[in-house]
Amino acid sequence: MKFPSAVTVREVGTRDGFQMERGFIPTADKVQIVDELTAAGIRRIEVTSFVSPRAVPQLADAEEVFARAARRPGVSYEVLVANSQGARRAVAAGAERLLVVIAASDVFNRANVNMTMRQSLKQAQQISEVARGAGVPMIGALAAATACPYTGEVPQERVLWLADQFVELGVSELYVADSMGMGYPKQLQRLTAAVMERFPGLPLIVHLHNTRGMALANVMAAMEVGATTFDASIGGLGGCPFAPGASGNLCTEDLVHMLHGLGIDTGIDLDGLLAASARVERVVGHRLEGAVVHAGKSFQAFPIPPQLLAREGVRTVQDVEGLAFKGRPPNG
Ligand code: COA
Ligand code: ZN
Image (cartoon, rainbow, N blue to C red):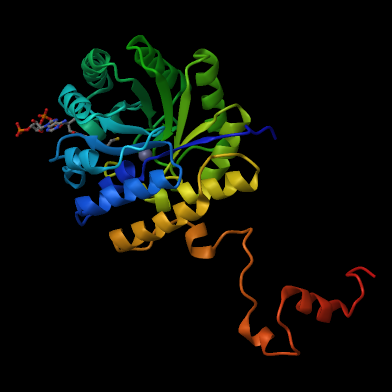
């Protein structure tokens, strides 16, 4: 397998994750989590969304979160918008990139934003005018790019057609999303490769959900064909309020744990992320899906079990090994 030497992890928990939480998360907690994530080395973060507060009440405090979060040098503070009203709010707040999402399935797009794909494209055009006027880059996100919960597998030509429309609007980046965690590694790999081949030189973000346990396998598949930027969500927060059975995003700390294990650089401090994940779990008040935060890092040494320590003067791992082999090498 061929891997990149470095990967950019784009954090989306405070948007894609928090929008799903029922109890309103206090603004101060949201701000603290954004700050902890950027302190841990996250360099791109989708802080919140500037959408209708009626559609997503959890993120009604977008302006305040944005104003209060620390602005660390070298970090890109990004947001999701769904119409020009949102784009104007985002630009006024100082957002550094605008993410515009259109689903490659009409049914899913209607469920998500109450618009057909063509109506959404009209909105995207208006958003692109606001973005261009303000000199803020726009990301074209292709949601439900692998499959739709209502219509099944989404044909690749449809996704590429939608990508063409975004490129005509002058997007600075494309983004393929397996929004419902329905995509298989081979399929996701084919799609990632097709988008990269069609738009060489245009950066690509891959956005994955772990609904069916395939997110990390999908990361491996996408890296093999050259993807180097992945969205992920602290603790594995997330889901989609408009998709049946949708659950968490690819978990940030699990992704970073795997990448570091593969020798791939992220510039992120894993311990800092694990501390942020533990805080997020306390703030949302329920167990999250992240594995490493609960199990511990696979390359960390755990304390020797007390029942062993009580026996035969065992104090260290070396003592235990010595007892097992009585001085002989394991295969001697
Ligand atoms: N910011 C603040 N208010 C907004 C807004 C925005 N970006 N967009 C719309 N509104 C307000 C309107 O002012 C209007 O308010 P009013 O009734 O007090 O006049 C109300 O919301 C309804 O607006 P309308 O244009 O009729 O939209 P709608 O009800 O058909 O909803 C969207 C369409 C796109 C605005 C709404 O569905 C939305 O914001 N969806 C985002 C969903 C999302 O974030 N999904 C996850 C991302 S994948
Ligand atoms: Zn998502």
